[in-house]
Image (cartoon, rainbow, N blue to C red; front, side, top):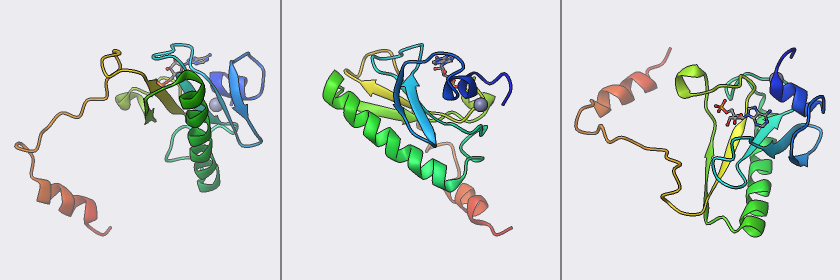
Amino acid sequence: MDNCIFCKIAHHEIPGKIVYEDDLCMAFLDLSQTTDGHTLVVPKQHFSNILEVDHQTLSHMMEVVQKVALQIQENLHAKGFNMITNMNEVAGQTVPHFHIHIIPRYQSNDGFQATYHDRSQEVDLDGIYQKIMKSE
Ligand code: AMP
Ligand code: ZN
């Protein structure tokens, strides 16, 4: 897609530190390096987000996420990972080309946070469940 920075990297029109590539997808270092080895896995074809991408590409990308994470674990000695995809601006997506973040973790207080605020005392869990499960 025109003017998409990740399409340009995927088509080798602008440089990236590419750690993996095949016909369907590519993995390259995220410029921000939130932690050492922070990597993005992207499809070569332009899809806006995880709900748009086809199943074959999505499944394959998850295999690549695992392969690259194993490489980072082995060579950078990461002790753990967060794998994250942000969908839409409301969730923090800044580049509208589907991507999965691989965020290696070396210590728990490294500045990266995925916080799950406990709202269990405030919400109607059964009501939410019923809404999700209702047939259309
Ligand atoms: P998100 O906020 O989930 O859309 O993530 C977009 C990520 O893309 C951010 O972590 C940026 O640091 C990263 N990014 C933006 N431009 C580039 C680029 N040219 N090469 C590598 N990473 C990039
Ligand atoms: Zn794109």
